[in-house]
Image (cartoon, one colour):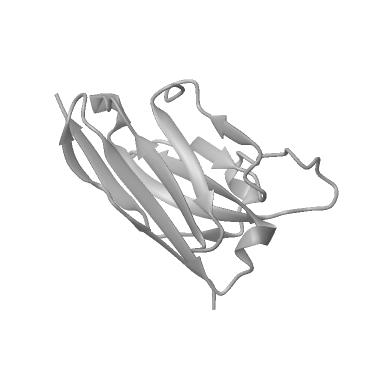
Length: 130
């Protein structure tokens, strides 16, 4: 049984930092691209950041570039999202997701569409106060 579990959300003031972690089990972590998404009520889930299966390639939404950093630790089956200089508009439920790599994609491919992801966590709430 595959499990994807996020942690690290919370309440922080604008300008502060949070570190989200996502741990998986039941899958071969090194065969999966990993992504972070966020969603606020009434809106579509949006891609925040992603990292390819090998860790050699990353992608960020324009709104978080320069503030967020994604990384992975295959020894711990964990992907981390370091979020600095948080803004009130970063307030959302954050989801971690795993996307199985495909031989038909380039090595540096990083998926960003929700349909590309096979497994999802339950989410962790991030609230940034002004």
